[in-house]
Image (cartoon, rainbow, N blue to C red; front, side):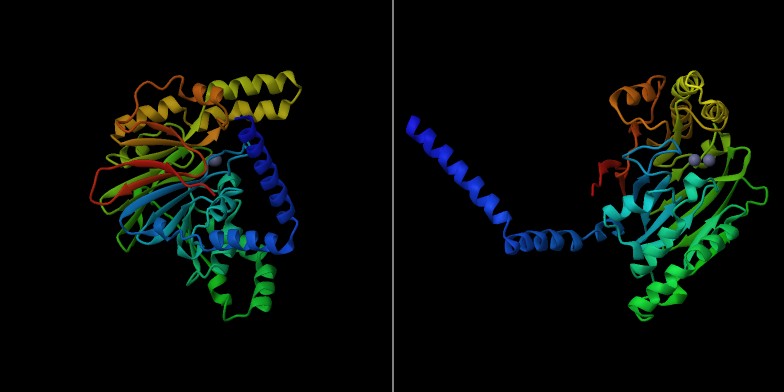
Length: 359
Ligand SMILES: [Zn+2]
Ligand SMILES: [Zn+2]
């Protein structure tokens, strides 16, 4: 028995020694890296775009309060073989790039409003999807001001666009496709308006309440009998309940005011009066988890997914506090969203699948 044990130890030591020596060999190093590169670069993510379901991928779930594991506001909807983006918060392109989504499949960007935590990465979304082979200019929908936003980002990235065309050639990177087309969304006093109807995908914008930010929108996507509503930033809002009626999924912003209050106190006691003032201003124009759950139940949605967290619930304790006052939830429950949360709604069915897409 002892002899067998010694033999096993000797084999283990030999394996480790050979492995360590092999890793010093350039040929072995190159072979390992080539294998990983083939696997990563060849990773087929086209399944996200398959027409058999409406899919929702959270690509940014934080608010301006930073989190090491979350980008700021971004929701990707996959429908009709295209990727539709609601908001492009700082860090959100990276979240999608790490998951190797097909950038060239982008259909349009829809802005809920023009706060920096929602718009910061438009330049990267435009540039990277163009480099990936987008077949035309990028359409950018949004409230009043979206035209200035688009022109500003285009100007900021103009030199980079020229450099890339000079480097890789206009055949690979046609300069005209690098353009963005701003499309202002005008409700003209209506509660909601259809802004896109294409390949079976219908997108409607509706007014939400984020004063003094006016107008501010939420968006509803309908495809193949399935639907998802993205709230944007809003305090509790009857029009959101109306527009979300009967939707499968409500992706709603969430602010836990008890935590915001604790942070405000801590800031005041630390002499951080500017931080305390800002934290004191924000409770009035966001929605608590309890209120969003009430609205989700009232609207009759199947699943509530929280996002745009203030503050981000990055540990068990904070996650528990976020659920503390939630009483009633929709039939498929309440999910505290994370970057990479993926919801799949197969067409021609009532199924709601919540899963993850990791890098
Ligand atoms: Zn925001
Ligand atoms: Zn906002």
